Image 1 (cartoon, rainbow over the protein chains, first blue to last red):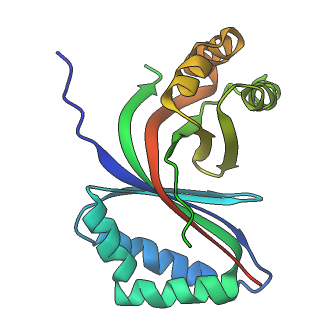
Image 2 (spheres, helix red, strand yellow; image 1 turned 90 degrees about the vertical axis):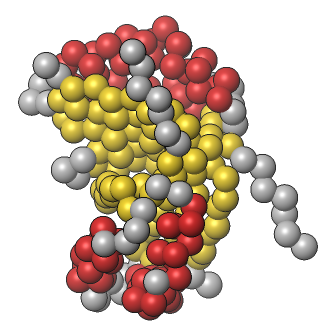
Length: 104
Length: 104
């Protein structure tokens, strides 16, 4: 029997860092911990080479809106815009289908 | 005036590599080139540390289905399942909203 798939949301954050990354790592760690405490948070994946990709997963769009307005997160976003990132892009996505595979 | 946003699709592919990555880099490069030639392909972002994240962007769900069935891509998928990846996850997502920022 197939499990019924319940859609949820993903935020795809892609970015390139500026030269001025002082304080970035500390804040990134802090924001990841804080995100994990939010209502509706489901998970997060992150990797960075030439480009950084962080995908966070959320129960619904309301949880994403609340997290975007979180006061500590607002300060981090401002630092990101003004200092750490030379460029970034945010995509709000509805996850409609998912499949997974593991080696036995 | 706001530009009207036209939704499109993202495929979030997250993976961890196995120990047996012979031939992987070559195939990854080949698949990225091949994806770029497909109808409906819009772009691709990739980064790998402990986890690999590749997000490809597509005009519609039909383009994704066709790419999934591409004969060369099917061979790569099989090698991925059987050899290169110890685990992977695929999420098909509708991009509903997007914003971008660049330093001036």
